[in-house]
Each structure stands twice: as C-alpha cells, then as structure tokens.
Image (cartoon, rainbow, N blue to C red; front, side, top):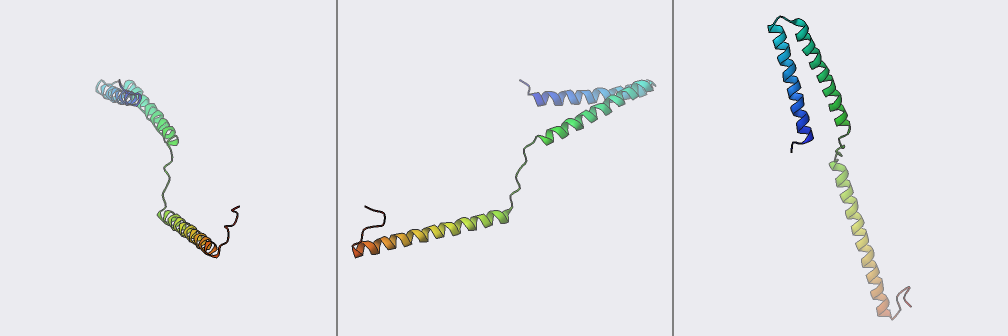
Length: 110
C-alpha cells in the first residue's frame, strides 16, 4: 500500500509536469492564454506547497539543543553530591562503631 505522503508527492510532481507541459504546449501552439493559464496554476501550486510546508514545519517537534557546558556542570554537581552522601554515610558508620564499642545503644533504636 502506498503511503499518504508518497501519494501526495506523486500528485505534486504530476501537477508540476502537467503545468510545465501545458506552458510548453501553449507557447509552441502560439496560444498565450493557454500558456499563461498553466503558469498561473503552477504559481498557485507553489504558493499552496509553501504554505503547507510552513505548517508542517510548525508541527515538527523541537529538538533540544544540548549545551555541553551545562551537562558537564550537572555531572560535576551530581558527583559532588554523591561524594557528600558517601562522606555522611562514613560518618554515620564511624559514629555507630564508636557507640557500639562504648556499649551505647544506637539513637532511635529501642
């Protein structure tokens, strides 16, 4: 089955070729009204194509721009937080070790 967008492309190419052929035919037959009519149709087709292309571009999802400096800054911040959490954990383990050696019960434990 032919996709919808492919079908529209085929129609647009056919429309363009038909109108270009009509202009050439009109000029060769010395029928300027015929040639001008096809030129006008081609102009209308171009305007419609530009309008629909603009509408399609408006509906495209915006790709986020990745700023390498900000990512590096975030990575450094996460690393610093991880280091601080590790230090707090070590401090907690050391405090618990000292309490257990002194024979005290842990805080909050009943």
